[in-house]
Length: 87
Image (tube, rainbow, N blue to C red; front, side, top):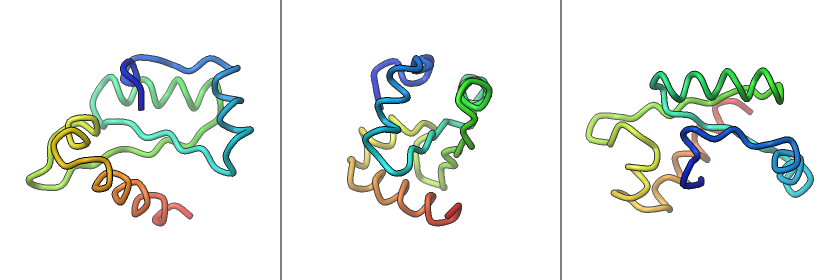
């Protein structure tokens, strides 16, 4: 997660760096207009299958807001649970 993650499309060099370091790379987006557009761009450029953050009642609307409010371990668990649904 980066400072410009909501509006920044990684270039090919950056994307390939992650593909070379990890067995799986997931792209996770907020389900708002910006997130849906960025998900489309990643699918178009890198053929990814986007995952969308779906906040539950009591959670914040954005992934980054939840990270700040609940902490990284909470959101890492969220990512792990979301990945399990698609594997």
